[in-house]
Image (cartoon, rainbow over all chains, first blue to last red; front, side):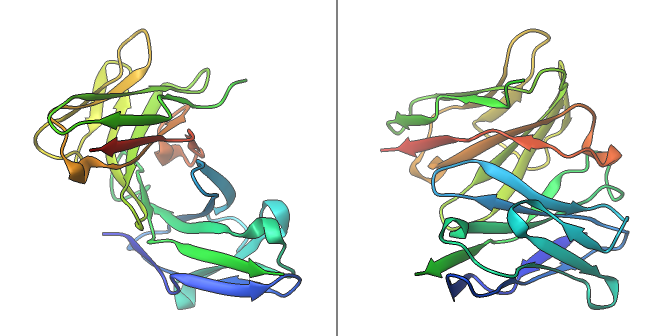
Amino acid sequence: AQSVTQLDSHVSVSEGTPVLLRCNYSSSYSPSLFWYVQHPNKGLQLLLKYTSAATLVKGINGFEAEFKKSETSFHLTKPSAHMSDAAEYFCVVSDLFSSNTGKLIFGQGTTLQVKP
Amino acid sequence: NAGVMQNPRHLVRRRGQEARLRCSPMKGHSHVYWYRQLPEEGLKFMVYLQKENIIDESGMPKERFSAEFPKEGPSILRIQQVVRGDSAAYFCASSPRGQMTTNTIYFGEGSWLTVV
């Protein structure tokens, strides 16, 4: 079975400093991995996705993530945080190959706080 | 091209009443997924439907919950005899084909159910 663990439930950074949101996954197959962002009382927006192409994935709003198979990690980074980045972030794995439905499996989420 | 449309956005029900949540997928999408987000948690898969077919309902509670995606009209998630524990955000997502083809699925903005 596939699973995903977000290592920090809450991360606080100052505006203009780097962001690191950590995610480890467990999968018996080559996974598809995603990062979604959710602003308060809003839906989910896809930041980026990894589907076995380049291991360094660039997403929207300056975010990127690196797939490291040896570490089973898919950490999300951004060089410089902006106030508008404050939100809930979800690391997600898709069980593309262990079932025929490809449903998404979500981590517990990381709340990013950006201080002025 | 309108996104995934969910309504109502907010719904309040008394214990024992029925809740109906609607989801209109993006134009051209024939695959619909429902996810539930309990307070302070990530999203959990509930059910995956294609037109007139339930493909995977492994995440649906055994009682009181049902889902349909008729040939015409939106997908409906129905919760009978609601209890306080049903209070959550319910997200619908759609894709043009099953997620197993690595297509990204697109989420609606969610329906927030509050049971009083």
